[in-house]
Every structure is written in C-alpha cells, then in structure tokens.
Length: 129
Picture 1 (cartoon, one colour):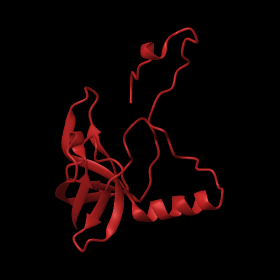
Picture 2 (cartoon, helix red, strand yellow):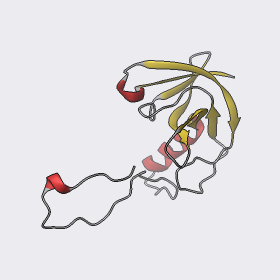
Picture 3 (cartoon, helix red, strand yellow):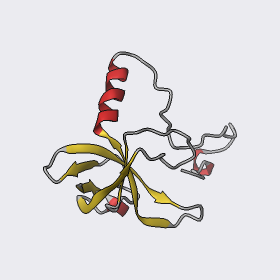
C-alpha cells in the first residue's frame, strides 16, 4: 500500500514524503517492549520533526500518526525504516481517555532526573530524548 507522510522534518515545514507500508505489527523502538499489531512500518522518510504528523494512504485517508524513524545505537538514521501508530489504535486510545481509563503503555519519551534546587534555570539541560 502506498503511503504519504507529512511533517516538519528538521524544521522544514509542510514536507511530504512517499513510501509503502513495509510491515504491520512491529515493536516500536525506543526502550519499551510494547508490541502492538497496529504499529505500521513504512519506508516513507520519517525524520526528527515528522513525529505527530499524519500518515495517509493513496486515497487520502488518515491511516496513522507518524511515530519515529528507526535510529541505531550511535544515533545514525536508518533510512527506509519508519513507524506510525495506526489510526485504529489512536481511536481506541482516545476512547479510553474520554472514559477516564488510564493508559498502561504510553510513555513520555524523556528521561527525568532530580535537579539541584540551588541551580539556576540556565544550568538545567536536556541530556537525552
């Protein structure tokens, strides 16, 4: 299936990339062991800045929300391996939120550490995302 990913990779607003659905049911990388049959793997370029953008099929139907590209341990981008969360999963999650049901699999995607209370705001930095 042909797909279109839209986002703002590297700050380039309104960028559109084309690809195909390579697989479904993948484990989303990033330190979690959460596997979902509705994770879409695509070869459409999904780079930093694309996450949260739409993934459309060739008929213009929203089929997912871009998650992230696949990065190997040294931070290099693995071109041709990107992930999106299926619109079916998003609808399910939104239903749970509306009903007040807590999610047991969502992550913030950031590591939080206790800051020195005597440190100034300018000394606080983001070390990892």
